[in-house]
Length: 252
Ligand code: S5P
Image (cartoon, rainbow, N blue to C red; front, top):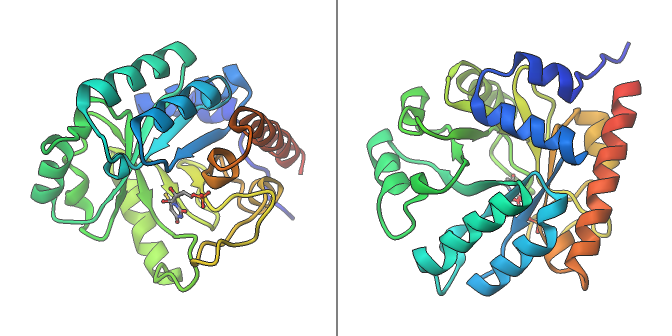
């Protein structure tokens, strides 16, 4: 018999980490499980996307190192204001993948100073348990499985990666294309309503599919939104699709 999934309300009751709590609270308040991926390359595009999608999303996922005119004052300060105005969190998709000391430097130093503004970050767990200790003040989403064709995140890798993710106090969730235990939040990228791939290895599923079969908590949508003619309308479509798919997955 198919197991029931836990509701956001019940996950909120047992959430330990302040960032998990915030995410679940925003999800319930906005009736949204949508994270928009802002894979755009200028500050203006980033801020435009944040303004348009802000009311419909729980978090905006950035790749801050692809912004060609990055400037802390002109990029981060207005982005933080928009996050406050529209009540969404900032998720920097840095996918750290080094020893603890180097990750700590990448997290705190350089021009991006991720530690000063990101609410949560993604990290590989390839560096082992202690490599995640440096992310003390944020939540970590562990990359357990990737969405791309031919990824090396096999069954046995994912099993070991999950052990680290489940036991580390800084970890709030996992990125994966497979089910994870209910005590960790599941973030699923590779979501698109129109395409099944991008010709560069990305593989897409629908919101319906990921909520039903993976019991995902949050969907991450990039090109489905920022490449759409009307990004705000697209965000609203994914928000509604995601929320309805979540409600249906509660019934099963
Ligand atoms: O396995 C993964 C993990 C991540 S975080 N596959 C992914 O695609 N991502 C990220 O999600 C990727 O870096 C990109 O920012 C986003 C997907 O974008 P889209 O345009 O394909 O929706």
